Amino acid sequence: MRAWSTFPKGPARMALALLLLFVAVPVFGQTAQITGIVTDPNTAVVVGASVTLTNQQTHVPQSCATNAEGIYRFDSLTPGSFRRYHPGNSAGPPGDL
Image (cartoon, rainbow, N blue to C red; front, side, top):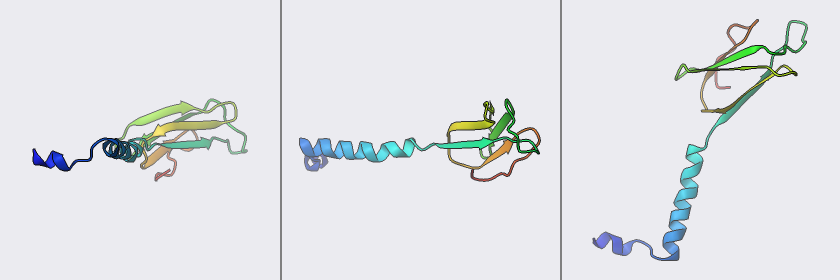
């Protein structure tokens, strides 16, 4: 048990613990958001359009509908490559969105 004798004690131990906590937390808190707008060929917004986003690595789809301004939004996404699908554009451009 000699190794513990060199471990910081008192305030130094607390400072080390807090430093490790603040360094580790951002690694687990990384998320992304994708927002867009759906328009028709005449550039009018499309209300209530279904938009599906599929993660290219996990193949897990998520869906939402556009709001009154034609805007869709996907929150709390794990950063990565996605494919977007919506009516009138069956295969949106894949890639890191």
